[in-house]
Each structure stands twice: as structure tokens, then as C-alpha cells.
Image (tube, rainbow, N blue to C red):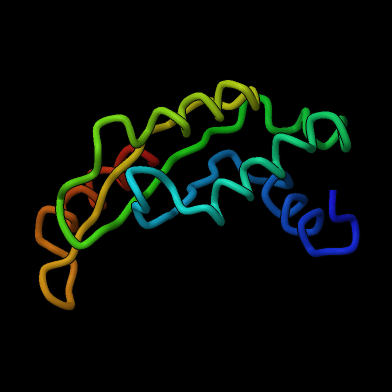
Length: 121
């Protein structure tokens, strides 16, 4: 573990006072970005390194927001997120995929975001 970086501070912000964590990532080579994968790997390290803090993940909810230029997210994209949530003791709340229409979000993406947001109420 890189004990001299900002990860622990960031992790503490996630576990303190939140019920839902939404991870956002572009689709890279059919899966989440490497940066997000590394971040989730580091969160899993907290189960053994910072056990008491890592246990606070239990019962929290995890969701995934993905984005790309097209509505072409692979069907298997969410599996690593679901499995990671399970491993961490978190409930997988759901996921949405958004894509662009030129420089703006596509209307389908806007509807997906609205529908997803309504589930959080």
C-alpha cells in the first residue's frame, strides 16, 4: 500500500456518512478504466490493512455510471462491478450507461440519468 499518498483520506470520505457510492468511468477496452480498477483494488486492500474502516463498506450501496461515444457498452461490463460490490460486502444498486450526441448527452442518456436518479429517492 502506498501509505504516503491521499488514498486513505479519499477512502475515509467515502465511508463516512454515505450510503451510496457511484463510480463513474469511460468504457476502455470493454471494461472500466484502469484508474478506477486500481482504485477499487485499493479499496479491497482496506479490508485487510484498515479492517475496521473496511468493514464500514458492509451494507453500503455501490452504483456504476459508464460513458462512451455510442450506446455500445458490452453486456459483461457490469460484472466486475457487481463482483467487487459483493466482495466488499456492498449492495450493487445498479448502473447506467450514457453516450454523446455530438457535444451533448444523447436524449436516451438524459432519460436514463433521470430514471436512475428517481430510484435514489
